[in-house]
Image 1 (cartoon, one colour):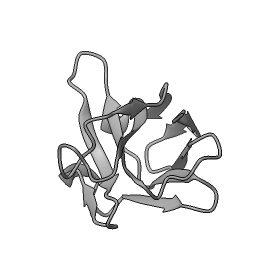
Image 2 (image 1 turned 180 degrees about the horizontal axis):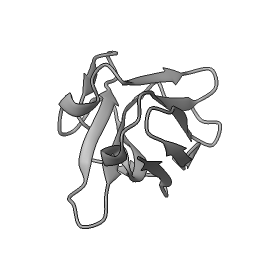
Image 3 (image 1 turned 30 degrees about the vertical axis):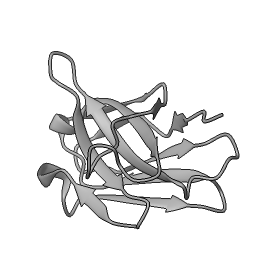
Length: 123
């Protein structure tokens, strides 16, 4: 059973960094397309970054060059390194996974979701 648990959110000032983690309860993640999504109050959810089962990586244009998605298959964990954070990055961040390739390439549809971790960036 897939159980995604995010951590690493918090409050930082603009220009700061955070690293989000998404652990799959000790189960393998190399058989899943995985991605990070965010949703700010009053806004629609948007895909931030994804990594497909073949290793292809995709980023939202506004985070390119600042965010890096990666995964550690041995640790069964997905990461999102966020640098040069901006107030507009403030949102609840969720990780999601699809078994096998992304069902809505380049992002997962979200067969499985984590509970989310809050990121708040102050100016």
